[in-house]
Amino acid sequence: MKDPRDEQYARLLVETCIDVQPGWQVLVSGNVAGRPLFEEVCKVVAERGAYVLPRVTFGAFGPPLPWVRSASDELLSAPPPIEEYAFLNADAAVAIVAPENTREGSDISPHRMQLLQKGSHKIQERFISGKVPWVGCQYPTPALAQDAGMTLEQFAEFLYGSVLLDWDVERERMQKIKELFDAADEVRIVGDRTDLRIGLAGREGKIDAAGANIPGGEVFYSPLEDTAEGEIVFSEFPAVYAGRELSGIRLRFEGGRIVDAGADANEEFLLEVLETDEGARRLGELGIGCNPGITQYMKNTLFDEKMNGTVHLALGRGFPDLGGENVSAIHWDIVKDVRDGRIELDGEVVQENGAWVHELAARR
Image 1 (tube, one colour):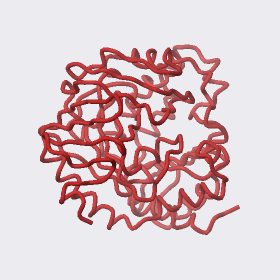
Image 2 (tube, rainbow, N blue to C red):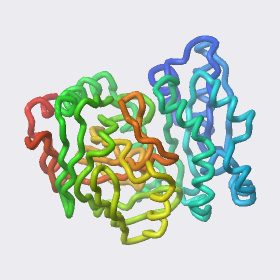
Image 3 (spheres, helix red, strand yellow):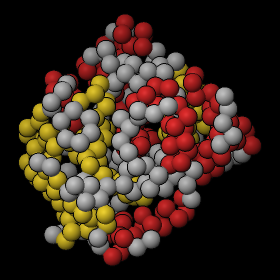
Image 4 (cartoon, rainbow, N blue to C red):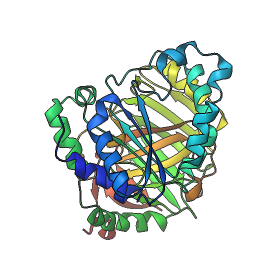
């Protein structure tokens, strides 16, 4: 049933996140279960005098899973030319994720996943360049609610509560946090079996306040690729990637590269992903969660990485518009809870046990 907040949601995506202009060709993709929001987005795009290029899928992947399971390596390694042309020439894109099963595709081998990811490299590069406006979001489904341990109604309230915020106010608040990190040469993350240093010197961050991801609520960076030193253990929350759930991920860095890795569950999959390419063993992102509407872990990275009192690291591809130079077919965000730890900038504690203790960052 259509939720009356869907129109407000759609206007946020079309008018604020990507600011659709007359005459644009806008790729709008979504799963069948996201139809109410899909239709609202199409309506708002029309009101802005722009075209919709619709892409409706039945599963978690763009290509149908039966095709992914049966296609040759050669086919998987390159997208269909017509589809590639659309993504390389569209003016903007909206992706609405509304899965019926969040573990769909978990039977696809890492090798076949890597071929798909490498084949879409040109498309990925275009959208992460910062030159093409795009936004990804989610729509309430029973599968997402089950992962979060909620009823569908509870999950819908949670989602809209973290999405339909006053983003001008949130941007102003996060600007204070960005200023602190922009001025620092090194970040130190300390927590359970974790002591990791990451270099940021010369790299400027970006505020996600109704930008490429909805919900927004993070300040993020592409760290210096050869600076990560130490160990981090993601002991608090399992990580979900490509339909797999991994718990207890452990990573040790030397000279910016992962030199040792393990996990309590699905370790073999972790190690296979790290062999995707050379860039998979380096960091493409450091993010600091800042969304006040996200208060609990949900097995949903789009939300979990924005949770107050967390940081997240992305293995793989960096952001060229933020100075990131790491190249990889993957970009895997993994969330670390630091509400029982601390964040230091150049030796000064700025966040402890999830609370900002530096005067600038704590100011609202």
